[in-house]
Length: 219
Image (cartoon, one colour):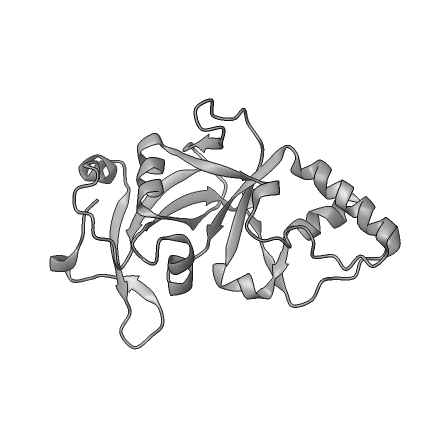
């Protein structure tokens, strides 16, 4: 039976979105390079010897694993400001099997862990899914990867679009201005990819679809 999929979004400045589309691949971020310094540090570990053991467990996991972060929605204006060049960028919408995505849980305090379970697999797995609740606007979902061989040119890590990472939407930011950066519109539409122009919603602090066809933008 085919797995249930959900639509999630990856935000980029225009340049990197267009490169992702052209090369049909997404960058995998190694755990050690994530932008939140509290990643995997949601546990309240008070004793130094326990902190050292905990840090070693996380370091072991981080050395050869990475992730791709997505958002469940593209309506929040803050995420466009932070990750898509202040609304001049693009959000790429993918259909991904639900059971492959990790849903982030947001907490206001670092959690206490019982001593007998401090470093077991279940505990580490739980901590991987916890973030400070000020990040909750992201509605984050994650794909976790064992790092592949690095790209020989860039030294970065990538995964290609495939049957479980299916591009379905291209959402142009409300301040997106390029009209001729690439000319793949017809090809993408033939492949079932919708191209959407976004706008600021009337009466709400949200981003929505531009329904006036005279104002639609193209890639």
